[in-house]
Picture 1 (cartoon, chains in turn yellow, brown):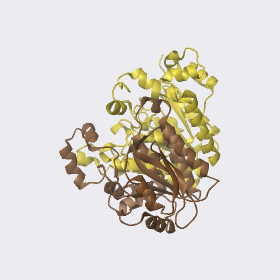
Picture 2 (cartoon, chains in turn yellow, orange):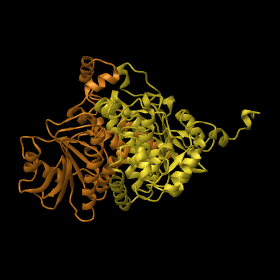
Picture 3 (cartoon, rainbow over the protein chains, first blue to last red):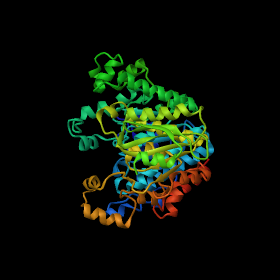
Picture 4 (cartoon, rainbow over the protein chains, first blue to last red):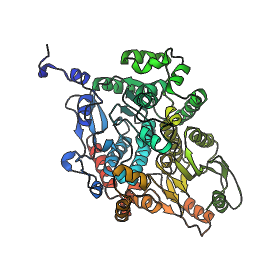
Length: 312
Length: 240
């Protein structure tokens, strides 16, 4: 029997809501403590992109990103959630500036962490120069905030994945949680195919896309520390876990990251496919990894134990 | 100007900077003394995992050992677009390089980018756009995306795009467009000594604070960014 809606706890609702399919606003509503979210420059302010009308394209009143503050287990957090359904969650001038401003405030305060819910194809091409520069400003603001003691956690599981400059910002975060559909890369499959040919990358081969850029591969490589199942409650728990685990930023972390990445190249640099890397990591029947259900995959990833903790 | 011309003009007393398959690394002594480490990408080389790790290694090796500014020379392709680079986590390698440069800059090793050729997308983010002051040289031709590719994505003709590009710097490739955005702090002259221009910059380095949004507003290229960021910052501080 289905329980009446009013009897469903927020946690149950978050558990039954796909992170991938939810809107940015629903993700935030269910990620944070119920009723705690306060938005900065919400859609009622109608701060739209000043550039889309040049291309006769529709604007969105929040320019595809929701920023504000809320509570997680009663503790304050700043949050930013990209809306992948508006222009692929791409970074434009206004969209990017909202996140930059949030990070600058976090840096000043020093003690309130930032959660970034990525869902982006990268730079918004219709305002490419402004978008590219916004990403550079965000990367700088993330590192300045981290240097001031702020924890910046990336949550990646949206439809548009985390591509282009979004992938670079994710690389600047203190830690990442990712779900299977949360792809992380710089060049998207279509971009590689257009530039290098279908022999280099067949963008229609979805299995290839998932195992090269998807959340499972990123978790096994240690690029993401936590693998979340595709529901908002799992991301909420992942965020809580990462906020507990992440330590302060320092030069030692950059030195450790240099070694971590150099070691990855030495160990896996000759591998031609993700399955080769997983086999090299000692996973038996590596070709079955894409089919593993979340709980079994998490157990496997924890056994392999590759993380970027203290090394990013 | 070729890389050799640039290095000779920057460091007339000599330098120890080498170009190995498009990856620039070394050091030099600016006229005012001290030691400056030099990294970069030359010959329109794509920035992939193998290249990025060498550049970050060179900078990290210098932190704690040397004390001077860091110069980043840029004539690159975009990031390397390949299955292997993405498989190995190119986003982490490019972010790592940018992080190392940003960390150095805010910890007493001011960074200067010198964009003298091409660059694009992720390669520009990990190099020139991760420095405190990005200088352009005449003839540099950065592009977030070239117009033919943009025509494909936006389904507009090249003619229509070129027409729109005249009225707005926001999407079209080129040094002057990026300068109007606030991304390029200044453009040097090819005709004068680069050493003189470097000395003038070193003697008057701006503070480490990122002011590119304010610069974009002053130049009329990005009218909203600074104001929006400032408003969000103010609201976030109030909500504390």
